[in-house]
Image 1 (tube, one colour):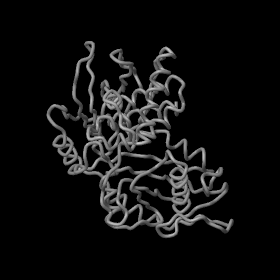
Image 2: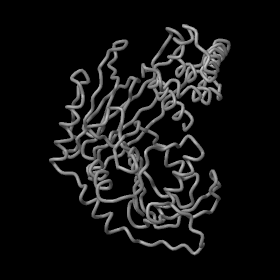
Image 3: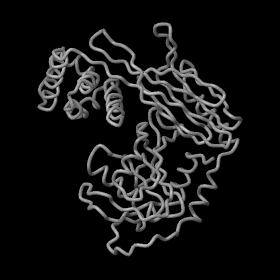
Image 4: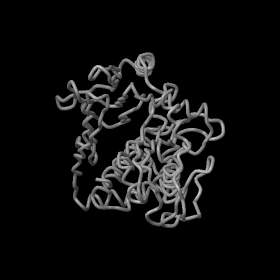
Length: 380
């Protein structure tokens, strides 16, 4: 198995951006420009590496290679984006790689582009890039190829194989990873580990609580130590955890409701299956059935939320009650979205910077959780 943390260190230490590796401070897949540039890089790296993996490292400052980290990103449907916009789309994988010195909620994103030995091009127009455009890597840049007689050339197979071999996991890295995980979590987070099939080491931590005589965990962190990959992270939502000899199962719940009438709704079940051949597979099942509310009540919540956002945009002072309601903006807009108000999402996004700059970061965490749920609902 490849230790992804060590692989990232090798990429950053021994190579500037080149024809098999790119680095970004962040991804912006919610904007047309950000989506287009991401697809451009995937296309270029795939065409420049027909017989070996290529990589994009996310959460790194460009000039000094400083590791800044990004938020945990659990969008398992990112492959769908590539399939929708590229001809001969390569298989890609997005992984969240833990680094001990980063805050718990930060990781380094690693996109692996697997080789398919086919010419990849844009299937449709995206932003300013035209349908049919072929991109390739020229040094550290993803460039359009103007000559239609493009040929795949294998130039990186040997060096990439060497980098990956030097990042192979070993007992020392595994033990250090377990100690890092335990030391980076407080005792109340109950950090623990389990070995599956005598080769996979999984660590997890979370604050245990009993709700209606059922055991839940919050602030859950799950990491596959062999690869230093964080498989799950939840800042607010409660989850239930179970496991057997071959599988680790996480069922995520979301707390939703109006005023004091809140209820836990199952959101998604994730099953991590560990196989005897040294591989593992992750299967997710979307469970969410959104609650429906009286339309009059939803209309009132939506109108009140829009009034607050309008004042924020116009820099108009909020009343005491409106300031208190800001903390519920993410949840209220999420409920409105689930009840048919599609404009709730752009309205919530208008308040992002204001929410992000609040001294108490709880509301911003709620904002990110709400957007994550919205993204999952849209995909499913």
